[in-house]
Length: 122
Picture 1 (cartoon, rainbow, N blue to C red):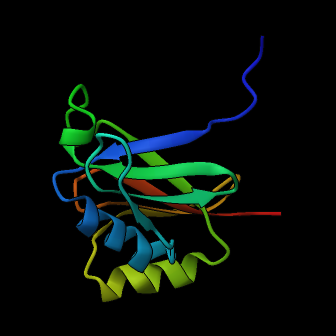
Picture 2: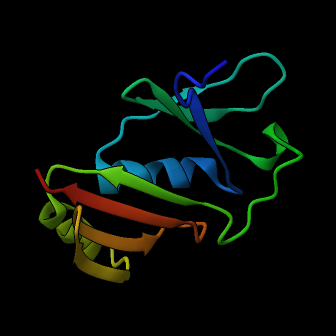
């Protein structure tokens, strides 16, 4: 047996709508609001086939939203564009530097999760 891919990443947030809006404003992600089965309304998008989902704690009672529980990295076309969006949104950059693999900015989302934007070198 081998893993084929990561099919989804779920963030649990006390305010899923606001967090989805944050990721839309920073990365241009388009989220769809959905509700199915007994799950409360949540937000999802697909990035290269991987579902990125934001739920409330009611949707995943075994997951507890807390700062520092995850770090996400997004490959982007332009680190300068992301930097400008962060500045406009008044989001503090925790780190900005060039690594062996490319340029990287680290910051926190509305829930305190560590987020990296990486412009990979070719």
